[in-house]
Image (cartoon, rainbow, N blue to C red; front, top):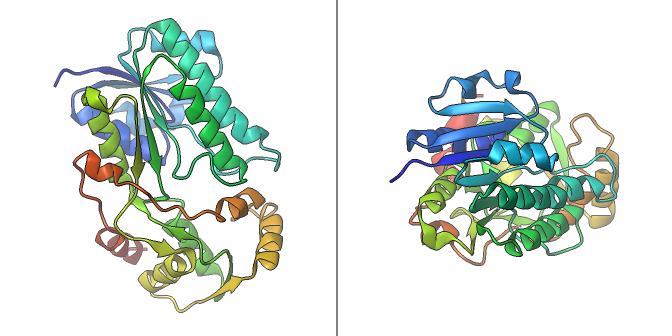
Amino acid sequence: MNPQTIVVLGGTGFVGNRLVMRLQRDGHRIRVLSRNRERHPALRVLPRVSIDTADVYDRARLQRHLAGADCAINLVGILNEPRDDGRGFQRAHVDLAQVLVDACVAAGVPRLLQMSALRAGEGDSHYLRSRGEAETRVRASPLAWTIFRPSVIFGEGDGLFFRFARLLRLTPVLPLARAGARFQPVYVGDVAEAFARALVHPHTAGRTYELAGPDVIALGDLVRLTARLLGRRRWIVGLPDALGALQARIGEWLPGKPISRDNFRSLGIDSVAREDGLAALGIIATPIGAVMPALLSRR
């Protein structure tokens, strides 16, 4: 395997940290673009990893950072926006994808790995709509692209089990909007492995991989499992949609924004895979039970 020079956008996030560590173990040279390089000392000490402060929406500057790279990886994504009008999602997902495509073409970078989401382009949420539109922009490019569509991602410090763990410590009763929504959670290490394998296998160009774990679980059951792993007795109350929509509207104003109106709309579509993208890449999916009991019991 020949080491490559890779530029990563979103490399300091939940998935990005794992992926950067995984890629540097393979001997690749990684440039991570961040809004503030000084906030990420752990990545700066890794061999063959550099962090540059950059405005990734500035095409000319982005093009300079991409000079000499073999591949760009876009992990940038948001789950909420300041207003419920879609503009935040449009900027983070669609506008950035187009800027990156244009900068890659101008800099002569041939390869792009793009993070998306399971069921992108479906339903009426701004999040899924913008993910789908970003995919359209990437597919229309002349680049050798690969798109990854994960379900919700779990692991140390995730925004799923750990997020509910914080809420469950605060209250004996947790009302839950759309408790019947189904997910197929995928382990963060498996997601990083999928990117790493696609990078070195040319046959993955022009393909989209759905990334999901072996467990299909409803949201209410996932929260109950979290409570059990924490050793807490909690009452999880599924809300009818009218009350769930009200909870989402109120949740937008609470600290940490535990739920938003767009989250509520996204929950209207089950995040369950139609294809096994991990298996297609030769990866055995990690079950929830192999990871989360140990992580949550420590807390």
